[in-house]
Amino acid sequence: MAERLENVGTPVNPVPLLPPRPMPPRPADLLPPRNGAPASQGTEEAVAGPGPLRTEPRHLLVGRGVSLSGEITTCERLTVEGNVEANLHECRDIDIAESGLFKGSATIDNAEIRGRFEGELTVRKRLLIRASGHVAGKIAYAEIEIENGGNISGQIALYTGEEAIAEQRRIRRAASGD
Image (cartoon, rainbow, N blue to C red):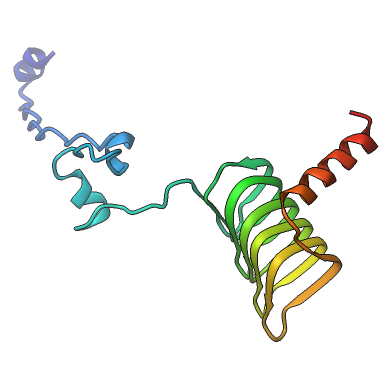
């Protein structure tokens, strides 16, 4: 076809070749290295700046505007900025931000509530309700601190240990017929 156009008298300009495009990084290259394994060269600085991306192990963050429902198990820390409707087991700490709402049951070591908690809460160590915090339901705690303005309502008891938890589970199973 180029020959035919030259014969007609129309000049043909060749298309210039573009330099090859750089390949975008793979998603795996954007993650921090695991167990001290070296990251691919240059990727870490390009993505996260001069230092590596730091995350806590087994930390679950439910961000603002996010809703989550289900079972949550074996996390070190749960941070709630959105809405969570769940049963929380084998978790050490929970932090509910001002914008956060947790509905369900939770058995944990420590809790800091700045938002709202509704349901059954068992805190084996320390329950801290900040001035903007509201806790309602069946609550058991070993130690409690409520800032001026914080609110707690419902069935409130002192946590007496794992035996009490086992007894509550046994009573629930007997009541449900399992």
